[in-house]
Image 1 (cartoon, each protein chain N blue to C red):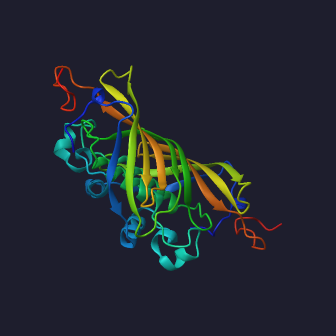
Image 2 (image 1 turned 90 degrees about the vertical axis):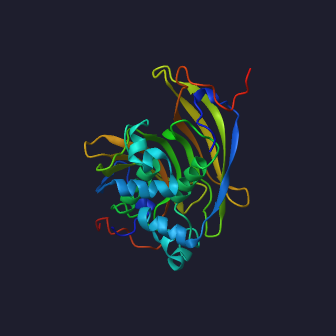
Image 3 (image 1 turned 135 degrees about the vertical axis):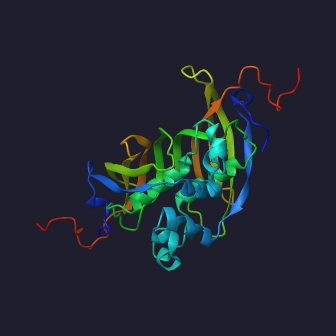
Amino acid sequence: MTAARYLEDFQAGESYCSRSVTLDADMIKAFASEFDPQPQHLDEQQAQHGFFGGLVASGWHTAALTIRLIVDSDLGIAGGMIGKELEDFQWYRPVRPGDTLHVEFEVLEVRRLLTRRRQGVLRLKIATLNQHGSPVLTLIANLVVPCRPEGANDSANESPA
Amino acid sequence: MTAARYLEDFQAGESYCSRSVTLDADMIKAFASEFDPQPQHLDEQQAQHGFFGGLVASGWHTAALTIRLIVDSDLGIAGGMIGKELEDFQWYRPVRPGDTLHVEFEVLEVRRLLTRRRQGVLRLKIATLNQHGSPVLTLIANLVVPCRPEGANDSANESPA
């Protein structure tokens, strides 16, 4: 994790790449049994006759892992990541046991809120990719980010003048 | 769960209400420690000085519980719920320990896909509400739903002619 960064510390065009994570059948089933208990996520035999022809992760598991990978990245928003809205959220292909995922994301826009002077919105374009570099999930996230408190030091990321 | 229902068995305007679930601090921390390990979801003391003034559930935990409540409902799509796209995904207010959530959802549109003759899309408007009836999360989900196989019996939901 880098030092806490305020709205002023981000710029459109910055891009990030997360670490990666490999899913196995036990992880897929553990998530699904709690949050998405359907045969395609729980039972190899039944899944084989279903839509995906085999066991696949819940799309919500992929989404939750995506957030974990972003939280663990260098984004480092002061006060943490606080989501407000998501757009263009799309699952492209299934995630199967043995697949390795990582997340690539980019700052699309940094916007100060006129109605809340001490907050702004960071618009992130997010893509979760598998080991073949193919997207499994893409979305745009709008995060609430605090402006730098008056009198606070500049970010450690900025060079001294 | 009702009998498996195909695309032809759904109609725009149908509405559903899920069972409810109450979150406690342990559930909030368990999800967060795996998928969203940030102080506002993990540590009461630190959370008190943060954006929400206390411990709150990860927005992704709320989303995962929303899906669990829908999976457990009477929607009963043949072959299970298969998500394709989400739109207008918005978190409105935090979910705190002791909050009780339920989901109200409605069929907005039933669309046959011209490119895939045996599948269609079910467009659902989804709202997750707390014990005060206030929305914590709303979204529109586009689900892939199979058409009834040729020669299959009509749904048990349809009255005989």
